[in-house]
Image: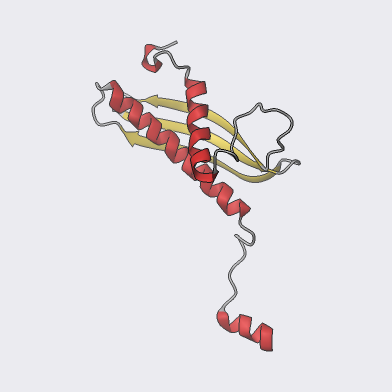
Length: 141
């Protein structure tokens, strides 16, 4: 294990960060990490494959990940994306700034996943809105 991660294993801290950010947006009673007890049937599942998560020589925190959003008990594909997020750390010699940049990258990823959940959960999110004239014509037409 590289010393740049300290005593915390990267996969655990990464997963916890995404779960915490999603729980902040949707409510801690509605977001949980897997595996979970079988009494809870999730509405959404997220499959996340982290390809790269580190700070490069230039000082930028890099998060390269592929994620898939699955809906309902049948795991219907709701969204799938690959994200490459780069966040400058400022001072490459300062471990605290490097960690802050990595944490910001995780927060950005969680925000993008949360936006996809919000869009997929909104009825008629992909249908164009009807104009006021069309609504009147339909109602009184």
